[in-house]
Length: 278
Length: 356
Image 1 (cartoon, each protein chain N blue to C red):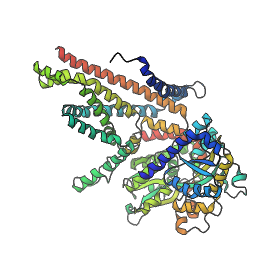
Image 2: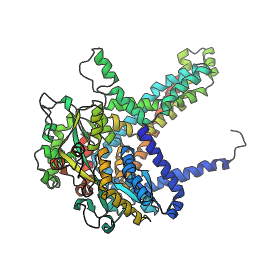
Image 3: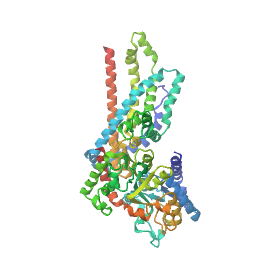
Image 4: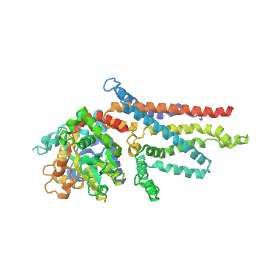
């Protein structure tokens, strides 16, 4: 960072955070415990009725699975792009960006066309004589996973790519020159250097998943209720207090989830380093 | 998507313009801001009510689109003391909610209906009945077993005679009534039964029977018809106005009026608007003008209660109206007060039940 940087340059960003993030967050906190006097009944209700913890757990579970699968798929893709010539890189990134320009609603509807009873996959399978009655894919939990992964994958790929493109590939070459096998050079040099970006991507995907509600409502089965759906219902019923309490529980779960992802990353890094010491 | 996006963007742009120019708009005094549904409902309202109203009175009508978050927006405006709407559409289920929160101005019936011609159900304290709509079962006639036709909720529950995937709305309202009707409860007793703990258990027990056969639980009207037209389900509930266009598009689909849930939606005045006089004028036009309403309901079967509405209406148009005598007879009147009082608790149980 050049010395020319001054703290006051951060002020616009800080002011924006204060007005558009911190103040509303404090307001949500206030709404959850002041209704109209100080009360914890909204949180008690959340903990007492089985439905809310179940939905919270399902939300966390779906978000973790989506984040992990996205990372596993995105990592080699980003690696492949980084290894490509500059011009090809640009083209590949463009291809990855295209679906991001479509609204989540449209992409969810598109999945209905693909997975439906009379949809593309069932028509193909039935036309080929492989099945006689349509396979049920739409309105199931796997349908939610497939769509959410497809929707969020580009974000993970791009985050991984930007971390990987900062890595000096000369370091990997140096490891090879010093006698490391290709896999060793990757494991000891490239993976540790690219891990941070991958983890950042996972956290972004995880947090976005925690707030999903259109996709599970359109593609999921009756059990695919996520916490955001319950917030929406309570807002339409003008039950701000309970909606705020649910939102805070969601925030809390997201923070715990992020800490868990970070800890897991540190363990992984230690395992890689341990291999180095041996 | 064009249909969906354009009015939405227009509404958004209008809302933004209004937010910026609000003080000026108030000073002008000859513009009325009406908040309501977008899409085809918004289009037809503009064409058959807002535009002729402007031609007659010289009062410009600005239509602002608001959908699911309408009540949340209203409450925020009322609480902040800057009410940007003069008139608003109030759905059946939002009426008791808004009344309990004190978000509407009372209606002065000497200005809307001085002779008392509207039926009592349309003369609510804080809103005038503007449209009837039904939550009904729609069936694919090509998926019926030879020589049979689904004609009651008991049939919908009869998965042996009528096999095939089904869809219901993902809310407790109306569905529990449908379940009780299927279980043999008389229309007149629906809400007395539902008001008891045993009756509620009975409704959920009946829902247990159909649960495995319901493949989709829809959350929006658009989705409910999509399910039928995509062939995802053969029997599914929807709103009556959505079925005729589907049938016109060539899909063999029919409404089962028997046991349908009839609702009334209102137009009312947000608390604290400055244009109460003009708002009453518009509401009177929207609810009492039979000539305009006849044209509206020929396009969109959501009729109101204007006196003499059915006079001289073609048989084909009458047949698809939820308040046509024959259809009225077949349905039950939904009870918004019951749901206003109980929705939160019952919906919580509904969600738990769905997860089981």
